[in-house]
Amino acid sequence: MAARDISARRYAEAVFGLAVDTDAFDAWSAALRTIADFLDEPGVAGIARSNRVPRPEKLRLLEAGLATEISPLALNLVCVLNDRNKLGLARDIQSVFQEMVDERRGIAHATVTTAVPLADDERSAIAAKLSSLTGKQVDVTPVVDESIIGGVIARIGDQLIDGSTRTRLVALRRRLEGAAR
Image (cartoon, rainbow, N blue to C red):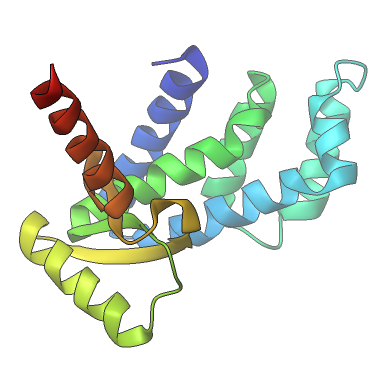
């Protein structure tokens, strides 16, 4: 795991602990998204990343832009990130935190690749099948890739379920090549 990922995970775990204590998962999710979105704005991002802008100046900008949008506790997180020169982790912290919340709620996210766009009923059927395999509610993000020819490739976290026609054809070719020798 990269140092950046480890740092983001540590901050996300700390925030998650606060969210557990106060049962404020949705509020923290919204606050982290607001912080990350603000820091992603082009003008703000340049200032936040700049070593030429003193941290007190950055803090004034952050407070001016976020003080009325997020809770004082969330603003304190921004201050800590600024003090430690870690503002660039905001989007990663938000992503890791959301993964933790989803895990707690029994929600998994799947990227489902098909050769043609899925109809709503097909998407629902795939989500139901993946839910029965994982034991979790599965949120499906469809992706179209004509090169798979047909079938479905589903990725849930680190798990890959490849039922594509292309993969089946490659496997068949390998078996035929092995039989021909």
